[in-house]
Every structure is written in C-alpha cells, then in structure tokens.
Length: 320
Length: 320
Image (cartoon, rainbow over all chains, first blue to last red; front, side, top):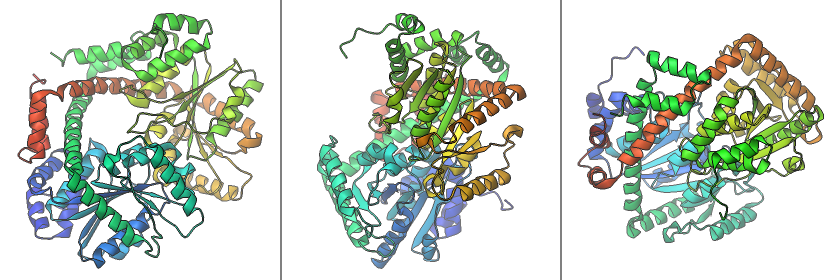
C-alpha cells in the first residue's frame, strides 16, 4: 500500500534481470487490470512464445496441489526451471481470493528455479480467462520454459483456463464420480493426460476402466491422440516421472502433428474476440448509468416496459 | 425435431389454459434464445410479478435433489402448487446438459400440481444467468406461486443463479469443508437459510458451530436477518417442515423490511445491464469475422501486433 506507484517499464526491466519481486508486482498489475496491465502485456508480447504451458485441473481434494508440488520436484531433479500459476477464482460476491492448501508448495518457495504465484482477479474486467494468458505471456517473456497452471476447483472458469494450456492434465481419484458430476464431460473434453492420483487407495482399476470406457465412447476426435492414464501417489512421488513422460509425449505429438500451433492460433483468436467483447462490455457499463438509465430501470421494475425494449432504447444512442 | 415450428403466442395461450407440454415448449424456446425467446419474454413480462422464488444450492452430493423432492412433498401436503427449475450448467465445450440424480423427483412427475424442468443453455447467448430469470417469469406468468430453483453444482454460475432467488437456501452436510472450499465465501454471502442435510450422520454440532462462527465473523450486514440453520434428513423427511417454516419466516422478513423489493429492483437493474452487454457482445461476434479479422489475427499470432492494438483496430470502425 505504501509502495511508490509501479512503473511497468522499470519493473519489466528489473524482472528481466531476475528480480523476483518485480515479477510479482507485474503479476499484480495484470490481476488489477486496466491500462497498467495492458502496458505489461505490450512489453511481454513480443518476447513471448517459447514457454510451454501445462494445465492441471480436477475436483477439489483430488490432490492437484500436492501433485503440482511433486511435479516441481521432478522438474527440478531434471534441472529444469518452472513457474506455477495457481488459479483461484474469486467469490463472485466479495472479489476475495481463497487460497487452497499451498503448504506443500512452500517447500519450493526459496528455490530460485521455481516461481509460484496464486492468481485471482482483483479488478481485471476480463476475469481469469483474460488475466491468465497475460500472466503466462509475462512469465514466458521472462524466460520460463515450463509454466504449470493449477486450478483450485473445477468450475467453468477453471476448466476453461486449464483447457487453454498446451497440455492439459486432468486429475481424478479412485472412485471419482459425484464430486465432478457437473463437469465430467467438460473434463473429458479437455484432457490430454489423465492422472489417477491417490492410487494407493482402492478402486484404481475400476476408475481406469471407467475412464477407458468414456474415452471409447467419446466422439471427440482427440486429434489422433488418446489421452494416456497415469496412476500416481503424489504424496510420496510414485508415478510422477511417468506423468511427466506422458506430458512430454503429448508435447511431442502436439508439436509434430501441428496440433500445438493450431491450438495456439485458436486461442489467440478466442482471446482477441474476448478483448473486443470486453471493450464493448465496458462501454455498456458506461452506458448503463445516468438519469435515462434510472428512468428506464424504473419502467422495467414497474412492468410498463419490458427489459428487451429498454435495452434497445439504451443502445439506440450509441449505435449510430 | 419433426414438430411444426412453435408459435410463441399460440403456445402461451395454451399454457395459460394449463397445457403442460406447451409450457415445456416455451421453456425450450427460452433455452434456445434468440427472437422466439424474446417473444416469450414479452408475453410473460406484464403478467409476472406474483411468484416467489426459492433457490437451493450446495455442493454436489449434498442432497439438494432429495431435499427439493421432500420440499415438493411438503408443499403438496399444504396444498400448494410448485414449479421446479433444476439448473444444469452445460459443459462449456459441448453445450450438452448433464442431468443430476433426478430419480426421486420423478415421484412427482405425474402430479398436476407440480412442474419440474431441467434448464440448460442450448444457445441462449446470455447463458443461464439470463435464461433463468426468463424461465422464472414464464412460470410466474402462468400462475405458479412458488418456484424452486435447484442448482446441480456449486460453480460460479450456479451460485449466481441461486443467489438471485427471493430466498436462498444453502445446503451443506455434516463435515462440509473440502468439497465447497473454493466457493465457501460465495455461499456464505448468498445464504438466507442454511440447511445441514444428512443430519443423521456424525458432525452436525460441529458443522452448526462452524456456520455460526462464520456468521459471527461475517461482515455482511445481512439486512438485520441472521440466516437460521436447520437440520434435515431429506431422505426420510425429517426437518423438512422446519426448513419450510424458515423459508416462510425469511419471506415475511423480506417483504416487511422492504428487502424483497430492493432485491428485485437490484436484480432487474443487473439483468438490464446484462442484456445491454449481451447485445454488444453479439455485435462483437459479428465484428470478429471477415478478411480484416483474419489478417489481424494472423498479425497477432505472428507477434507483429499485440492483441490490444488489434482489438482497437477492430473496434475503430464501429465506434464512430
């Protein structure tokens, strides 16, 4: 709060020199949105494009955080550097972020080869779906080759964000079912790799059969890639190297088949569309104030005008 | 598929006469969105305003469906008619709806005093947050005094939709915690009544203490209403009359304190804003096509133009 106003150009310069607190402050600017976020984006954009993103999603309690931590450990043992974005969708009401169990991740907090950051939207109009790619591009521009995107829950926003990674890992547990009921189909569609975590529990074979069956029934082309199913016990590291090999195999497939560039182009197109929609949204916000707006709202509340007619009238002025 | 095209006016007339299949078809029109949905809205709007909505939300597996069914039974024993909208957010990818466990609800399927419908968005641009109030107004216009809105999961859309009811019931279980981690704060904020369902399990007292404590700590004004906490076993009906009494008490409070009309006005304002935003969004969609759009996307993919500059250029033409 008492800090001097952050200048994106200065911060970006310092971050390029390896100053972690500048990186953190740039990410805060992105979270807050507005012109400073855009400035950060402008700086990062031309330098980005080399990083590779791996999304991890799954129901709360599936062990994503522990698995992410285990993956970090594995990557470090391979002498790879890694950045982690933990996506915490805010409550739609408070705007406050709720942190998941990040305890294990703190093991890596002092390792300079690891950068971990929770992301929420504190004001970014585009929400996490626009703020996340901006954060990824920043980390990418700063030279992070591997960027893990871990989501806290399994809501629509989180599935969407995780599904926009270059490789998406869906984490389930033996006997998954009820807890992801509402989003099972969404998860099936975005999975490039399945992990059955907590595989020391009963029910691994059934879950594997269940997943295989769903893959058999799936009408999705999966671009000739059938998501492999890896069993892990993240808490003790069992299966984590296999998981990483599956990610690497998918990356190789995605790069050689052209899938990766296709996906990235598709995402760019989507993002651009979203930015345009957002600008218009912002205009709607500005539009929906003032006396005329108040009068119209009252008419709608009093049921003398229906909402669609009122919207038409509001838009009438702008759309010349 | 083979049916003749539905005429909203004819269907609305038949629905007013009590024809249930016409009601169902009108709801399908709302789900699909576009001009026919708008026409349905125009017909319903002036006739609506008497119905009262009760939202039920909570984590998957909390027993919302069973509780809804038990509530229906209780309302029927009081000779009240009831309509139920079960909100199923579609997968963001397929647009397909996944039905939750509706088995118990089928008990009421043949009762003419009960109307049950699953809602998804099959094309409605505003998604469930716009389609749901339209569906509510239709049922309201058709004379349903009590409209229950049950959500399948606890994602952002569902919490939002449930939170827009006149009275919102949040369903938890003894030992709730992990499963609603990501949205606990959101749930706390929208709750007018708490239900600890499956109260025949261990941990009811702890859960009650936990909730009381969260209410004590809550800085929300709650408009001088402190959400009561009711214990139920929906499967055998225990506590269901108490739950209903709590709903009625909240309704009385909301009506006499002015909270209800305040909330409804706020919701109208929000909806109007959303409709305006949607129209603009639709314009963005139309905008983001064609040769110029393709060229710009390619420049962004090739990193010669950043996405914000590209968006500016796309919007340049419209914003005269």
